[in-house]
Length: 106
Image 1: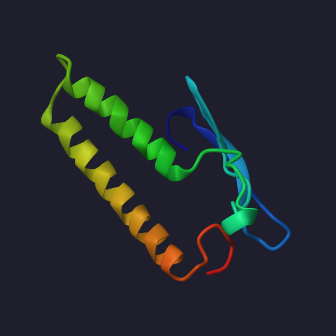
Image 2 (image 1 turned 60 degrees about the horizontal axis):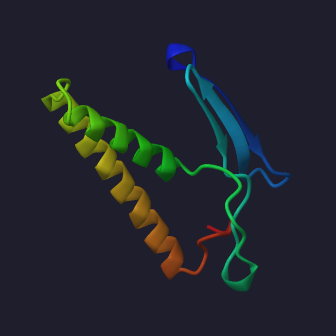
């Protein structure tokens, strides 16, 4: 991976994503392990979601934009990250509509 970032991703017994870790200089991410479930069976998250990490990157870039380091490249990066979040939100809404959000069902 880029800049010394290391990652280990785990699968459950059925081959579904089941958490993992990603490390780099100054950060460590423990990824969500398993589905959250639905309704009364819904669990609290036990790790980060991709959306959380993207949102954190947007926040940091917006901080840069309020500093002497503001630039068009940062603005474009923010725009692209916001677009990535929008696509992931579309995926979530679609899964909610099909009543499979929070599960490993497709």
